[in-house]
Image 1 (cartoon, rainbow, N blue to C red):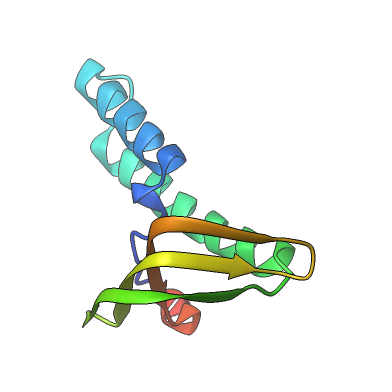
Image 2 (cartoon, helix red, strand yellow):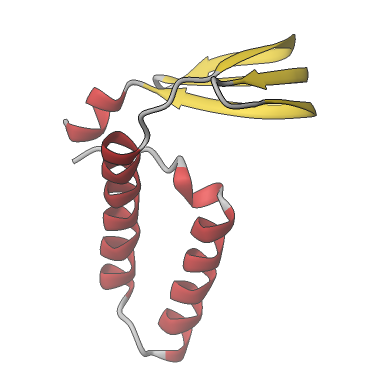
Length: 106
């Protein structure tokens, strides 16, 4: 299964990676098992987002940078406004990473 390491740069993903690295260095965990845990983490995050996130949000802002590499889009917006049915929030800068979720299951 091909995986995109989208969630590993999140706070929880970085903490998990650091913990697994520490466990491999201490000999508590094999490198192969650590890799399997990270792959399962990517899969679980994707499944959870698909199953639990039902609301829609619109985003407006100034597109500062965009790029498409290895079937992954990366956008950096400045002065971005997120608007949903319940609320509206503006942030100075946001990075959005997006890919086709169908590619995760191939």
